[in-house]
Amino acid sequence: MTAQPEQSGGELIPRPERTPEALRQALAAVAPQRLEEMAEQRDKAVAGALEENSLTPLRAWILTWARDIEIARRPELAARYKDALHRMHNARSDEATVKAAADDLSRVLDEAMAAVRR
Image (cartoon, rainbow, N blue to C red; front, side):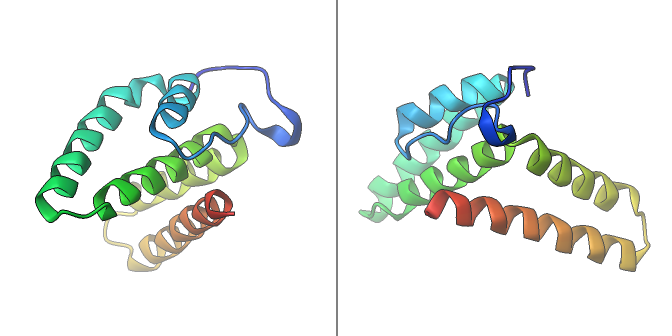
């Protein structure tokens, strides 16, 4: 994530529209290091849509990236996400710690998804 002035409500940028170009521009602002990953996943979604003769892979791609951008554009949510991942990776074999971290990660992902579906 790049350092940028915060918008109102602690957001780095406004929530983008759920279009490929708006999401790409938003990602370029909050996590440009992920642009190549986004493009690769877009290409896979397009291939999947053609193979399945369905828009489902493209819809899933849009929602996944809208969710990830939602996390990245909100520093508090991004901090919770990174903390949960860090605890999961460093818990080793402590099942209780892993479960608590996974639960926290799930809550962050759910909160972000709910926000972009509004």
